[in-house]
Length: 475
Image (cartoon, rainbow, N blue to C red):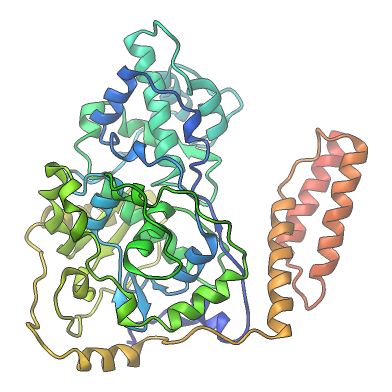
């Protein structure tokens, strides 16, 4: 079986036939984190739960075009980027250094509970989310409006309630950000029921597993949205690749803060520029071991587990299991790369609780052996010519196509489609009739434009039809 056995589903197969999906919508939502005002007592609990360093990162402006270009190079069959110079990936040690999250510890798993989500909120937040709960997910808006500021003279219980709300808002907006970050799983509350126990989890490993899954999903030709900790992905690129790298700020830990300065706004057309830059990526433009020069500012507690960056193991996050395969990226550890071994065939993503539990139990056994499965420099100082010949034979080396009028039209249509998809989810019930008419007219113009070249999709039509029915019933 070929290494890239999912090529037909991959976005590169669409790009190479002139089908552009446009820039991905990046759903990490950090812009409102500064609204949370934490007291000294809350900060102590956040630190105890394992997020004391991570919370310092806050909001970093995302370059959606760069992220989109990187995702086009990701192969979920290997959990690596396929660049002209070989494979690269985000490793556990880099997560630890960039985000300040522990990569060693217990796997982040939410146990099966019979407790109703509303009861979980009542018990661990002290409030019922009236009208703000959908299934087991609560709205991020309700969390922020209800808990963003702990009242003066709050009891110990109230401080804990507000801190748990902050923590699930934090993880739901960053490390576990889904493609719909407006709602956050109530299950995460169970992870913060006991703050000290929460501090024993390998949050960094979970963040990486979740990001792997999100990049993998977004690398499929049918996808247009990406979640996960995109701050990690972008900062990883800035450290390793000399492609539109901004100026570093003052050295501080976590190392993601080195790129905290405000980035210039990027045009969606930059996707083509980044795609070509990655096509032309020369080994001289790659920093294989970029973090070594900043280790002197890293706390000793994080240095102790950097060896796990070379652990071939399974990573675990809530309802996610992903392989961590550093043996495919040995140059990132200053070692020579040889032809790597086979990767276990990727299974279809599990949806049933029993199947997920079986996968997680198997992965847990693998994770328990993480310190035993450290990969070394098996090839010694070998000539990498054989590896590069093999790599070029199994990968898709070039993605950039010269832009033409046809491609430009397709990109405009892709942008219109994104607008149409967003517009189809809007509720017009609270608008003034004239405002509603104006919005509907704009949406209709977009819809008519999409009918050129059969870009108008049935799912979008169905969304709009349901919205129109809801509007009519409200009248």
